[in-house]
Image (tube, rainbow, N blue to C red; front, side, top):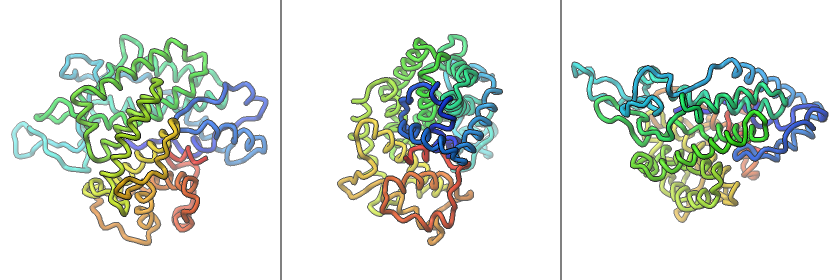
Length: 405
């Protein structure tokens, strides 16, 4: 799985990190879907007081954006291998946990080693390029918004045009060949997990919406691309297969479908999916005590439990855009996102020992970023012991914490 890489400093503290004389030149408050627009106004007031944490956050953002300026354009057409369709414009990747069968001369069909990544996956870089695109567009969009320096918007717009619009390099709006397994299948529904960072990407696009670098025609063209992709997700056999997944794959499917519906101006569709699909996932995936049986069955049980909860937190934030409250939703079976968060809390604090299989070190950063959100959404929840164990950081936590306001 690919975890988001935006820091807390660059996501929760940045709204308004410049002197007011410069801020007055900025575009109107952006219509982002994950990062709360109200955070920008609050930070304007804070920076007027020369808040040192926000000045530091701005410096970190600019450093990241300057690095992104050095990156070459990304495209699925740059791969040397041709997809089964014969069209390099089709995205393709190989399942990460599938390896050659050493008992077979040709290694086929591949066999699964859960949690152990086959480096062959890295030979096809479409997944790597897509994740880099998401991160770059987001950080460049933030840098443009808070500095007004056109070079950041120009670079982000070029990356977007290359990936989505240029006839020579654009990706076809499907994932028919995601997470293939040599000797078994040319593509699978669970390949859709490759694009789970789309929320980060779309928020970056929304930040650029007011920039002259991203024309209205290009913005509309990208919207149309996502409309076609969403249609493929909802109606193709591969897309429907992923929608039917019962674990984190299904949850991240909802994340992608919901934000694409919001981005393509289909709020009623987004609300329908949240109420009629996501709420049912809460009931089916969680136990009443908050544990996640399907994630606990994995060889990276903590990481996947956190990863799935991150998807539910993402959906709860997206749901706010259509007046649906998933933060406090309790299913008919007494299941809830809050209980899932609380169930993991003793293990994050260290007061209880994790008893499930975990073949690699436990990653707590994602959980800590969710905790920054949880303490705002659940003010009666005592997280003091967690912060004693893991003091709050500003530079290393993940994307989700940007909603804490």
